[in-house]
Length: 227
Image 1: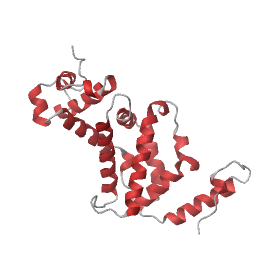
Image 2: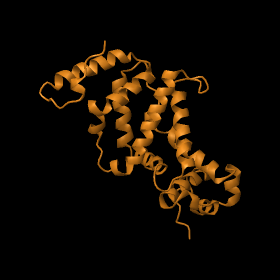
Image 3: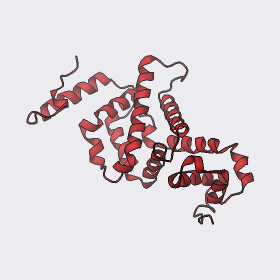
Image 4: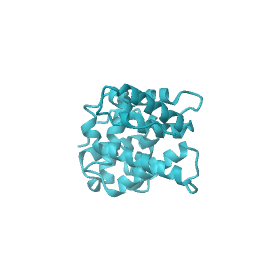
């Protein structure tokens, strides 16, 4: 017997089937999920499934794409506002909003034991395209610097998602806003906002050098200002 659907009278059939995909993926290996499982979990019929999707992989792609697109930290910075303030606001929104935490929980499934290489690659592709879109670049004509930054950022995202199940219960907002943790992510964020990265890094290193005067173990504090 399928579990009772709390969203059956609220969400469209397509959204319910995407939700069913995530619920089933949390429960079993992707290769063991069938279209029959999806329609039962979503409370729809097979005709409804094939009206919206040609196959289960197409449903998976749609579900992954929508989760990636709705993550607030992937939204581009406003060039007219302080990027550091915006970074703080985005991280705060990501960790304090239950819906956003659920979104991270779902994306983490794609790096978990129930996933497949195909699902992980789908996540990588959508995350890459989303970032390129934010930068207002042509994905077929990326300069080396942008391509490298995008690959580095997406790789970091996947690494975080692999560890998200163990981090989600212990990580706190203050941990992500510390300079020694956020400095690299902030640099990427500044690059997206087209701010002067050299000025930012000099300010970070200068501040870290002063604040670490009594802490000889600080890694950043031993760095020299950029010239």
